Amino acid sequence: MHYFKIIIVTIVLLSSSMYACGTCYGDPNSAAVDGMNWAIISLLVTTGGVMSGIGFSIFSIAKKSKNYNKSKEF
Image 1 (cartoon, rainbow, N blue to C red):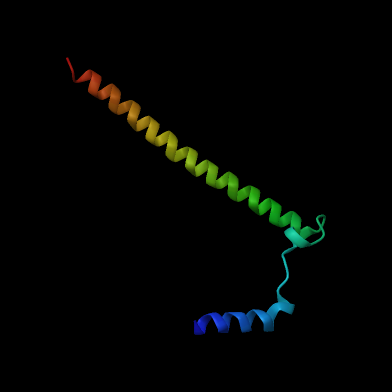
Image 2: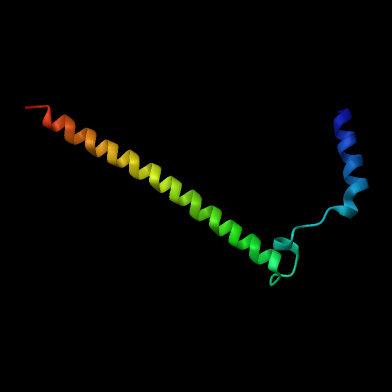
């Protein structure tokens, strides 16, 4: 309960220095917003590429395992 009071007092004292970032509350045509948008896009592309690679690897291993098990039946 003591921590809650400290958090409230800190928020009240620092509320004038808390502002939203340029993406949410700024000029949509500024260079900072463009940089943030490109950063988000590049992170999505990187994450999508890695996840696709992992998915392809799992699919490939499953396919090879299935083919190997079919060849061992005879």
